[in-house]
Amino acid sequence: MPYLFLIRHGASFMPHPALVGEILAWNEAMAKKGILLDGNPLRPAGEAVTLRVRRGRSMTAPGHFSAEEEQVSAYVLVDRPDLKGAIALAATHPMAKAATIEVREVWGALPALMGSPRPKRRPRRSPPRSPGPRSRRSAPGHP
Image 1 (cartoon, rainbow, N blue to C red):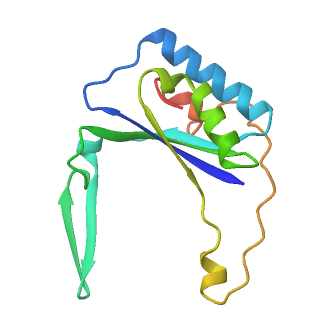
Image 2 (image 1 turned 180 degrees about the vertical axis):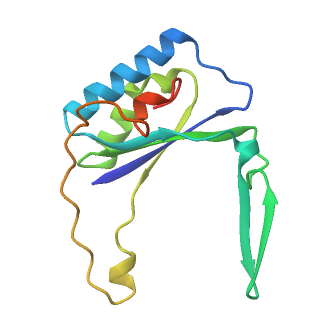
Image 3 (image 1 turned 120 degrees about the horizontal axis):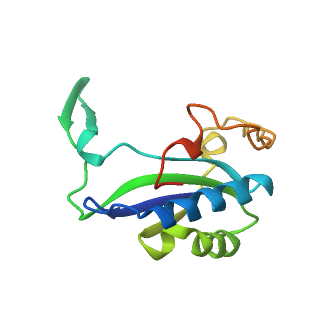
């Protein structure tokens, strides 16, 4: 089952080089095992744009939607058999020592609720052979 890790920390957080190395090693190890499906850091929350559509009108506002101190800074998508396994895996992520990791199952039930058949799961991707410009290894400090 796919699980999403939402990694949150304060706006002033800056990872030290050793932590960046640990994150890169964790990503590589999980990709080789076929557990890591995707993951990337996000641009700073201050660069976000919040969108709402009400009564057919789009309204945008600069910044992220939450007034919380912690901001979502990265996401990691993993494949684990159950929530217990996903939580145990999240505890091994290097950012667990420095941030908060929210673990959520990706809910694939929406098509069934709407009367449509559930789409087939995509086959697992092979780990990348070499880091490219969009690689999760290209952005230091985040998974």
